[in-house]
Image (cartoon, rainbow, N blue to C red):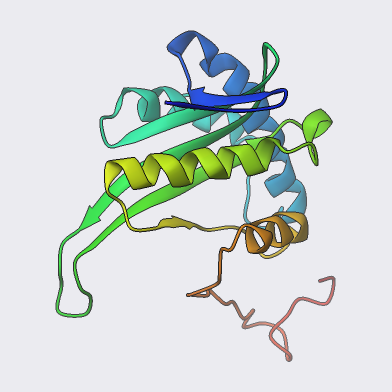
Length: 172
């Protein structure tokens, strides 16, 4: 399966394309390190670079690639998740977008939209009723994009720093 929109083609990545995916993953990692240095490690890249190969090999996940002409300019790592029923929750099947990124030189050119359209079509063909993803609150551009793509917040993680009177650090 693939999606073609003007200059953009989206399909599952080939193994030999994963280093190009990693180039963009590193950009995404840097956004996180800069956005929340209290959480994300500056040296994390050396520890996470091989995850894309694991997702590529795993039958319950995949790596999607977006191309501008011949250049790989965006990616999504996805997981196909089945959660059994529990005392708290019903059984759920979901297509989880674990990682998502577009090369900084190709943002606002339709690449991310094409990736989401591919994921929606792929999820539909695989029998998943919905897409899910999570993102960090500081990434306002990503939030605006996901909301424009019809994603809605259904759960929140919140934090409170116990050493500060108002629950937030003075420099935030």
